[in-house]
Length: 178
Image (cartoon, rainbow, N blue to C red):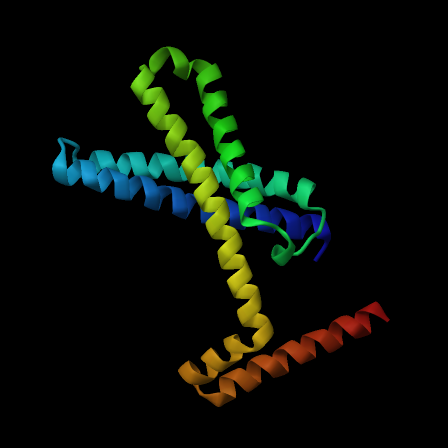
């Protein structure tokens, strides 16, 4: 697969991860307003869905910025603080773009501050969570825990079949490179 196609796949995957994280954060906060305030359940679901769409865009932009700034470094070499700062900066950029497109005149000061906190928090929190999940997945794959889990769930033959398929794919790639 060409590098640019892997980059686009990663950007879309990061966008989806941010969308799930953003909807979960806003939905959880909204459930508090539903249970203890005067918000309707459909209103909370609508706000969570809108935040998922916005978070997807934040995740795609974050991933593109990360591709430019990380320059091929592994996840282990990247700091969680830098990831969170970049995610928060992208959330701040999204808030600023919304404001410059007319939201500043439509928002009250309270609404603007809540949106600022939500967008930067969603960006920073989703970025940090994405890095931690990626590190954990990579370490589990390197230590063979993925194959152990397949063995535990599907039996030892599933793990061996996975290893056989992986080695066959590596041989095919080696033959194609030759």
